[in-house]
Length: 170
Image (cartoon, rainbow, N blue to C red; front, side):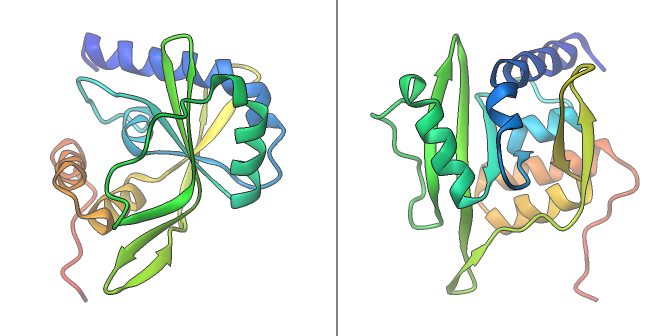
């Protein structure tokens, strides 16, 4: 892993350590998704903007209440026609955290709840670990999202791994 990759991993680990007490209080499974999950899975990215958390609706509501003093109220996520969730964006020091409770994706003319079908656990430190989708699952999610930036991330997975091949529909 190149130097910037190590810096990204350390930045994500620091972010998760800052919010670990809140994550420990969640009632349902929580996943780190998006660019941060790619980096934690060993895919090299030059930069990440935030740490995305996929939670249940009730856990999103809980975190929004718990972290209300850190909430950024003047932010609306892009692509509201493509995604729906119990959304909150928070800032801790210089770290941005986005919470997406019960994320729904508009796909094939219908809203579908995003579910994680395969995941792995990543140890952050001796007290904290997080769940991320497997790389195969991340590939599926990025192609489902279908935006240009997501398709670029799906292609990075293919370029940087040997064992994931796109499905041919069979």
